[in-house]
Image (cartoon, rainbow, N blue to C red; front, side, top):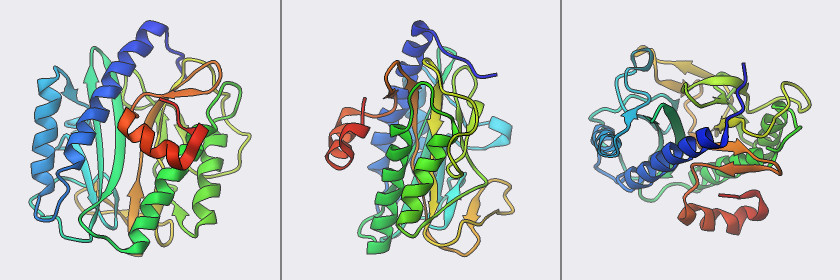
Length: 265
C-alpha cells in the first residue's frame, strides 16, 4: 500500500530528514586520508543520539552500524571498519534515522583527497542523475518515469545503473511502497500523488552493472571491480512537483548552479 501523508506527517518527515541531512553534512567532512569508517560511524551515532533520534539502520535485519560506508568498488551497505581511507578513494555514506515515529534517509559519495578524473566524472554524473530523477517527480507521472530519467542520463555518459538495489517509499517504516528502480522504460507503475514520500537513490558503476554481495552478507561490490557511486535524497510529492526534504541550503545553492530549476528545497 502506498501512503499519501498529511501536512502534520510531512512536517515530521521534514524534521527527521533535515536532521539526517545535517548529520551527513558533518560526517562527510571526516572523509579524509587516514580516517577510518568506524570513526565516522561513531560520530554519526553520537549526533543521532544527541538529537533525540535513533539510528534507522543499526539492528535493521541485523545490520551492525549506524552508517553504511562503501569504499571504491563497494556499491552499498559497506560495514564500517578500521580500514583507513586513502588518498584517491571515493566513499559513499548512507545514513538514516527515526524521530517521532518517522524515518529520514539520504546518501552521498565523496572524494577522499585528490581523486582521478574518472572518479570526479562518476560522482558528478551520479549526482546529476539523481536530480534528473527528482525533476521527473510530480503528480500524475508513473513511478518508472523516475528511473527512466536516471538511466538516460547515466548511460548517455557511458556509465551503468545497478539493477539489484532500488529506491523506496519512506514514512513510518524505513522501506515502504513503492519500489523505485533506477532504470527501465517510463510509463509504468503507480501514478504519483501529492503527499507521497520517496527516497530516490541512483547507484552507478564506472564499469558494468553487475554486483555481488560479499561473505559478510551486506557489502555489495561491483563484479568487475570498477568504482561505484551512490547519491540519495528523500522527497515529498507536492501539488506542482516535489520538495527535497534532505537538501540543505548550502548544497542547494551549489547544485542549482548545475541543475537550475530541477532543484527545489
